[in-house]
Image 1 (cartoon, rainbow, N blue to C red):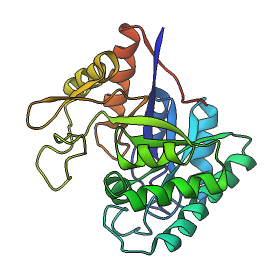
Image 2: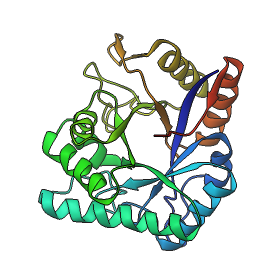
Image 3: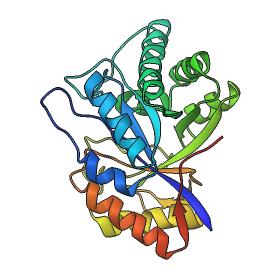
Length: 253
């Protein structure tokens, strides 16, 4: 049976403010990228989400972001690489702590929002993330946008890299994600999302906003937890993959 990892950004609530439908979505995925308190989340949410992942047999990863709670990590923060590296190490270490206290093995690391988008095309930032992961635990898997600078940096640093495809985001002709400021950047139609993912998994291709097909060959597929349709998207996606003989399975070294 063919396999693919289905990941989702989770633990993005903060204090009394709730974001996402983690308790429902987690039943349909195989990996959770849990916010580490910089772009979203807090210690209580982190601990709760790790426990939730453990309950459902879902792999846990640290979701790293710029220190930007007000902007949900989607704003560019100008910060010296050496300073950012320490902030990323801090976030990875925090998530490791909650994994250890809950008897869970941390599997992967993924960048969030603006950090992810910029590092996909910025070599220096990509290496900053890769070095941060390597410094804490070189066995962790670096989840990186397929064919991005992050994928290259991770491999050069000797990390295990998982190519990521995005189920509900539009791509440009360079294989990068279309800015959320552009109309159609986020895809809300469950049927369209499912068909896109099937092509990614079965053919290794995705169609861009300009109508051309590009290579992607993902190891893991992301559905955004803050997408209002996330519960239905992940439910339909898991069911359709099973129908096609494709099993959802967490990443492994």
